[in-house]
Image (cartoon, rainbow, N blue to C red; front, side, top):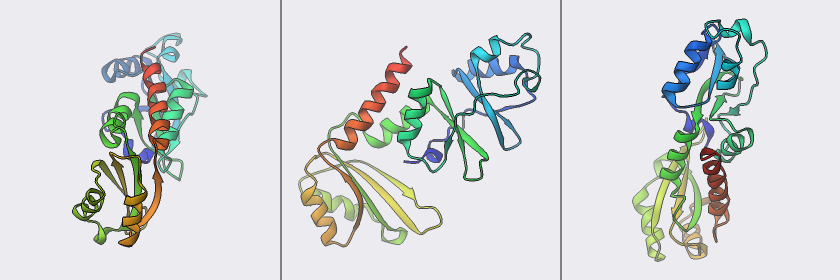
Length: 220
């Protein structure tokens, strides 16, 4: 799962010419303590609630008070791990997301991020992960599920990612078994390309640890 797939449509960026009052109103409305500030599609920085409280007058414009805001961000093609690490390390509630041209394309917030991860990855369920790569016209979940079930396992969740500038797909499967050897062998027998696999809780434990770190931060 990449950062650009986690963009929340609910949180707009602040224009550099907005006031501190508007920033606080939006933070209250969207229940966050940070908001990205932009000038066109240029990312100016991340404004915090404390920054606004430190303004001499919240009715002033942001560009009148902040010449050098901190600029934490994640590129859209980065893994969800890096998004989670950024939130936990920097103690921020919103992560700005930029494209390869360093243009602002959106942001994700802590609550939206966690809802997406728990929904897609089935983080609380035990099991292994298999990531398949295939052409779009070769994708059929029915056949993939049949192969998994032939090996006495079930797909708990699946997630499809389009490979940029390609007709390929990455299909991430969460399977209710840590013993993936037979399943992987069967996929190989049917000429499926396996990009990665995580058995015995390797991937899940790491993600669960990062999830718990974020939840601890959320409960502070």
